[in-house]
Amino acid sequence: MTAVSVSVTGALAVRSLLMIRRVPAVVLPSLIFPIVIVVAFSGAYGALVRLPGFPVDDMLDWVLPMSIVQGSAFAGVNAGLGLIRDLEGGFFDRLRLAPTSRTSLVMGPLLGAVSRAAIPLVIVLCVGLVAGAHVRGGVVSSVATLVVASLGAAVIAAGWAIGLALRIRSMRAAPLMQVGIFVTIFMSTAQVPLTVMTGWLKSVARVNPTTYVLQLARQGFIGPITWSHTWPGLLAIAVGAVLLVAFAVRGVASFDRD
Image (cartoon, rainbow, N blue to C red):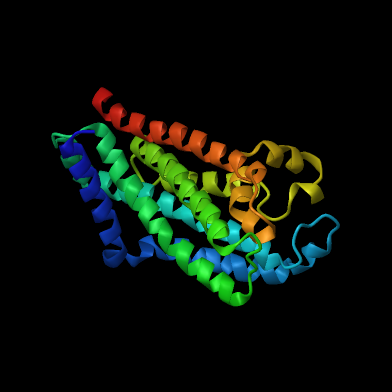
């Protein structure tokens, strides 16, 4: 990227962060919803830990990393929603006239989404630790793997949402952005591990890349950090990020063909 493209990317990322102050609703769902999930699942489904093969004694340790990853993913979705507002208001058309690469028009909102994802990550993690979550793999290592999984989920979700926004170009894309995230998360090991699943859901969860992202995020809350539980999540994030960021960048190119 040229110096101009880097400058535009940074400016768009900062603008995305400023939206938190101007439009608090941008960040509130990705913050409040994970906390609600932690409270609801830890209480209502707490007895699931008694199932043979469940890897933790406290449901909070299982739910907390999942809720943080989900909150980060929805921070990524908000990048797509913000882009739709720019499309409908004509701001994005003005950006396309700037002497910069098309990639920077995607990377700016995406970088802003990753930065916003740090907010629910920090706050929800602190809430969970105060509530009694256990960190069995060491604080530094456990938090590091959780951060990688969460910010990786934000990148993937932002690529998905931005790509849809650039193709549909209206708020009609919003439900599809959100449903895509819900489906991939809840058809994984979001609620229970593979060892206690049965039927078709187990088969789907086994091949769902989100299962391995959640494994990366959770391992320090379940036990020690191991490479065998780390590399599948890193691979899933790398492949997902490459494919969906490319999906978003190609969405900008679609304007030039119209």
